[in-house]
Image 1 (tube, rainbow, N blue to C red):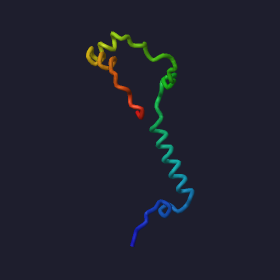
Image 2 (image 1 turned 90 degrees about the vertical axis):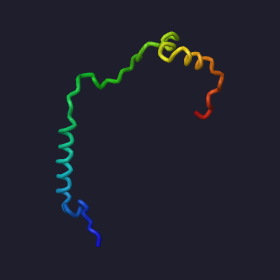
Image 3 (image 1 turned 30 degrees about the vertical axis):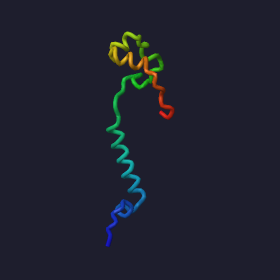
Image 4 (image 1 turned 120 degrees about the horizontal axis):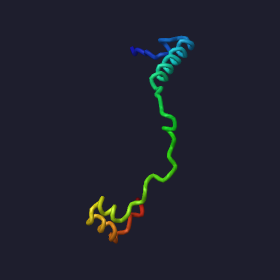
Length: 80
């Protein structure tokens, strides 16, 4: 014998289920409200940063890595 505890059986009327849904949604909305500074959610469309010079790239990745990557004669994978 299986026990079926579906919400439809526990709360038989549609109005009860709708009321529970409204209370649940109101609780979520109350918790999710957050104060956001004006313009904080704007997506920036301008340039992100300046282009790196070869000297800056060498400093960040190291001289050996830079030369290896620069003079690599291996062809890139077609499927990547």
